Length: 366
Image (cartoon, rainbow, N blue to C red; front, side, top):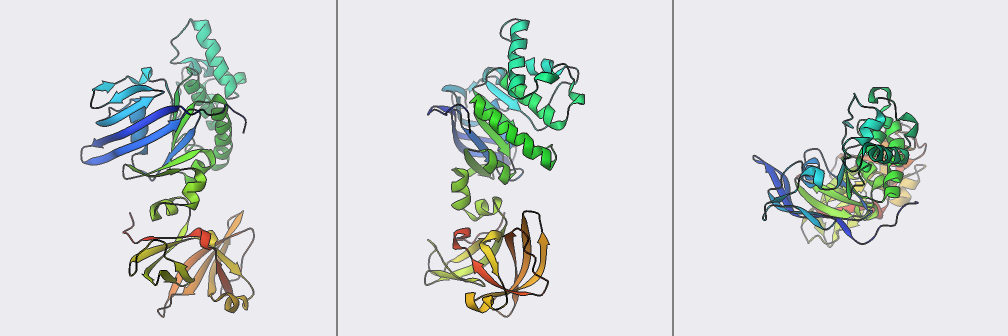
C-alpha cells in the first residue's frame, strides 16, 4: 500500500497507566507502544476500558498512576504531577458521532481548532486536509446536507489539519451502515497510511481491527492481554478469550490423558497442559470440514448428522449433531466456503483442521 514508510521512533508510550471510577477499574497497569506511522487497533468487549484509555492518552481524563509520552514528550505522569492539556498534546481526535458543528460549513469545521497563522493560512491548511479526504468540492456545504460517510471524512480532516503527532479514533465507523462502513474504513486506511501519523483506533469489531491494523492490542477488564500483528493474534491466540473474540468457536471440555484430549471429533494434542488437567478445546467453525457422501464418515472416523444448513453469502453455516461419547449428542457448527447446503438429516463425514484448534486451561467464561 502506498504511503510514508514508518520509522523506528515511538510516537506513543503508555507505561503502567491505571485509572478507576469509584469501584470500577477501567485501566489496570496498561503498557502500550505505537511506532511512528503505525496503526494500532485497541479491541475488546464493551466496558473493558478501551475508550477510557483513549481519553487518558488524549488528556480528557487525568491518569491516576503511570506515565504517557507522545513523540518523546511526557504529557502525563501521575508521580510527577504532570498533566498536559489536551490541546497541547499534538493529538487529533475522531469520535463515533463525528461531533461536527452544525452552524459551520465543511471548511469551517475543518479549520476549527487551528490557531497558528492568520485566517488565510488556517483556511489553506483546512483545504489541504479536506483534499486529503476527498472533500474539496464540499467546502461550502453544512453537515446536515452530508451523508454519514462524508461527515466522517470531515471529522477526519479536522483532526488531520493541525498536523498531529498522534491520531486517536474512537469507534469511528460504528455509526455507519454495513456497506458504507466497509467503503469508508477502506478509504480511511489509505488516508491514514498516506498521512503517516501514528494512529490508535478503538473498536469492538474484530474484523475491522484485522482490516485496519498493523498491530492489535486486545483488552480485557482493564488490561491488555495480548499484542501482536493480526496474523499472530489470529493464528496464535494467547487465551481462549482472544481466540473466541476473533472468530466463532465450538467449545469442548476435556481432561488431558497421555498428553492428549479426547473430543467427539477425535483426539488432539494437549499442548502444554499437564496430565489430568481439565482443559477447554476451542475449534473454529471453519476448522470443521464436511465430506460427502455418507461413506466418507467411516473413512475419516467421525460421522455427524445435519440439523440445519444456512447460506450466509460467501459461506454456509451448518449445524451438526455429533455423538459426545457418553450416550448423548453435541451440537457443533461448521462454516464452509460457498454454497454448501446438505439436507436436514443427512449424515456427513467430518475432517478437522488442527491449525484452527486450540487447547487452553479450563476457566469460567467471562
